[in-house]
Length: 234
Image (cartoon, rainbow, N blue to C red):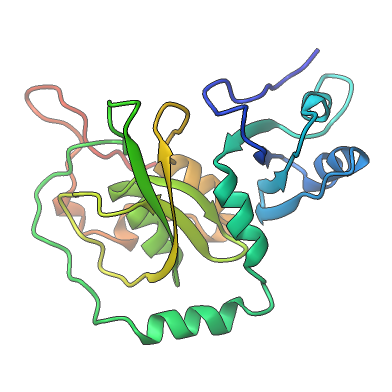
């Protein structure tokens, strides 16, 4: 009996897959047995391309009888394509060059409350949204953008993430990003933005982010008289 399953809200027509695991080794061994090559994007997830038959993915879900992958999420193909082009060997020089062209950091705007708990994509499911690949230099900066922007995927190993481009937000993060020319458009019907809680699970345990790492605590409220939601820090 399977303990986990394929992500039901994701685009199963895609060939790009993010496999979540509690232990990377048995997950990778199962995937590799199907001639697939999974590469860790964080300590709990690995990215891979599944060209045709996806039956191997079902066989690699953890059950009561065997330990393998915890969950499978389908992502836009462009994410796997661009990840394959990013070499860990050359990434430090690439990031250094990107940040050398950056203007000074943007200071956070005064704000007494933030209107949402988790980012949400447009309600118009047919709308095409542009995503861009950006590099980060600190986990605190990554967490801030995850809270205030729609972040689709993050690679802790290669220090980059995909986020919705030119999204209007009520507050700016006090940190720099290394913007790239890598972009793609995608419909919203099969995508789900990353929550702060999910991001924290990708980070090394010693680097989990708390509210005091980014914002003065007095700018964050956890509710209002109308019952609306506010950011809640885990």
